[in-house]
Image (cartoon, rainbow, N blue to C red):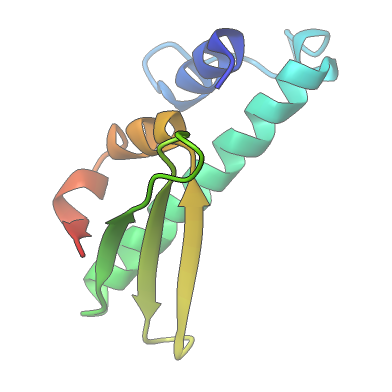
Length: 111
């Protein structure tokens, strides 16, 4: 992941130092800024689903796969309320950021 994109995502995820998307609109109009917003939204959605799976007695597991030396990680969620399984493949850096979110690391187990 591009270091600039990673810093933007970290700032978006950090509640103690919020980054205003309105004030910094020019930053988020660049390709890197748009990528940071996509990653941020995806990580928040995954965090929400991981917490939901934990609350309803579902499961979350991590399957580590090395694909072309990128260190991709697959996260599998069993969502009982939807009667489905959600599978997300993340870059190693995205997975690190996901694990920093509250309640995520405790909920994930290695599969």
